[in-house]
Image (cartoon, rainbow, N blue to C red; front, side):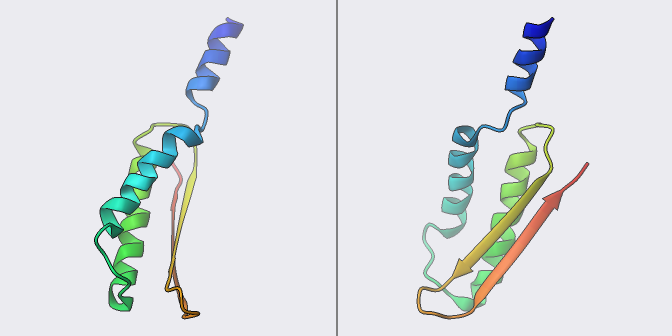
Length: 88
């Protein structure tokens, strides 16, 4: 019985190596062919947060997620941020 509990806890563990390529795919899908455009940043932030949260919740792990997206232009300009949370 102890082994079953250990296996279950491993299956339910957060595995960064599993999640990183999934979230990289989200970023690539949204930003791959884009050039910084201040008018589009808010939309990109929303898409990245929403799609990242969808990706994470599809893993069906017993976690509460907080997704933060920060997009800034590399010239000392202001920043745009967005957050998303999921609680069951």
